[in-house]
Image (tube, rainbow, N blue to C red; front, top):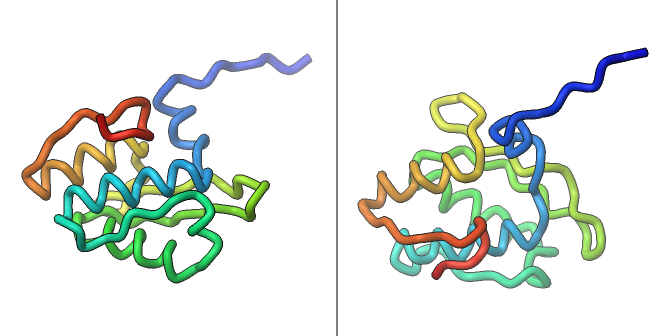
Length: 115
């Protein structure tokens, strides 16, 4: 019988996520960091690929290569992938990096709401 191994929180963060809700939250964070250069989107806006492309471009302005997979309306899609200098990082690490580059820091509650 195969042994079950537990993932660390860091490893779990690398393979989880990718929902449209998370990507919508990214747009709000990026809007704040880039002073309105990225629009704020709600979940239902993200069915249009150009909106997802805009969010990916905003991440790139802050040094993060983001591959966002919002899925369909009721399908969360594959996990989002965030890379810095070619290395896969967690979403939290990508947000921290973006804040550092932008020179702004603010609390982010559970990775969704800007408090």
